[in-house]
Length: 188
Image (cartoon, one colour):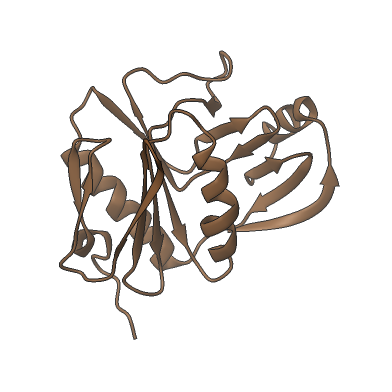
């Protein structure tokens, strides 16, 4: 979840300023977006995905990062996905290892306050990163997952809406069970 602030700054100023902040902030074309905390369900879903992937991907071939890892989208855009995965060695913007350049898979857990940003803005950002092969959006308030995968003709979308669904992740050589993603989550 992000809250836009009125503050504008250069990339260099943002990177230096961000290191001193307690909260995380995304940077998009000079504008700063404060990252707010998520709900309990949001947090549980992120942990479920993390543990599910960690038990399924072949380590050390893949490295999984939580939402503390910033991803550089372009020269003027930096975001914090809920989860990102790198195949092989991670490539960082610089020696500080604070901005990842080569994720192959990114995940956002969408909430009512982040829905448009995750499904439109961030989708377009991730599509622009050459290394990204798949982008997964998980709804926190209903059983729904959208998987975008890169193909020769563009991006393909698959929709999953049943706890019985299995999401094939060819970029990671594994599958993700939707029932495990929503483990301990109850919907009214």
